[in-house]
Structures are given as C-alpha cells and as structure tokens.
Length: 168
Image (tube, one colour):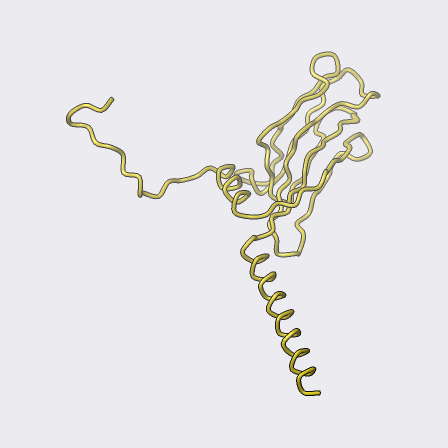
C-alpha cells in the first residue's frame, strides 16, 4: 500500500530487457518454424558447431536436454558453450557437468543461443548427447506483405483474362 507522500512509478520510461525477454517478445511478433536438433560429443568429436544461415531470417538454438550415452564411463563430463551470447572473448563457458552415477541427464529450460554457437566437450570421454530445437523466426509482416503481393498478382491475372475474353 502506498503512503501519503509516495508516488507511483512512471510507466512510460524505457526499460532494459534481458536477452531472453527480447527473444520471447520476438517469438510473439514473428512466426516460429521449429525443427528438432541434436548432436553427439565424444573423444572423436569434441566440438559441435552450428553456423549462421545466410537466409536473412533470425535463428535460435534452444538447448533442452543433455544426457550421457549408455557407453559413458562413470567420470565427470563437462559441456561448455561458445556463443554470441557470452560476454567477453571466445572462452568456452561451462553449462553442464554430468557423471553417470550421480546425474546422467539434465533437462534445461531457458538456454537460448544465437548461431554461430559451438558446444565443446571439455572433460570426459562421452558419449554426451545434446538435443533441443532449432527455431527460425519468419517475420509475419514480411509474410503478410508477400501474401498480399501474391493476391494482387492473382487478381491482376484474372482481370487480364476477363479483358481477353471480353475482347474476343
């Protein structure tokens, strides 16, 4: 409850949003196209790189699950990430530590990465499986404008066909 001398906060001032708020907001304004994504990290493949696509669309990688494979030894497995989302240089940031006898799998929520992103098995022999979603955001305004453009072309074709029939 507000006291006699207190004021309500000013609501029209700009607020700083976290990157996840911006991503969540952009998901609402754009049409997402989602595909299942996954990779395996082990002694032979210690890095998994997801590159940017050159299609002028916004891409996100949502990491959902990291789990040890059936053949993984009971040792510490550390998975780190290098991404545009990390602050500073390209030093990998550890995101998951797994051990078969303690924590063989973890479900994640809220880890969103903008490609290019690299997942690195820093410790352990694996196999470690990463899975999630690759989301491509299609701008509804651009989609709507293209749809209207096609509709106008169709209407123009119909008008031309009628004119040709009337002229016969």
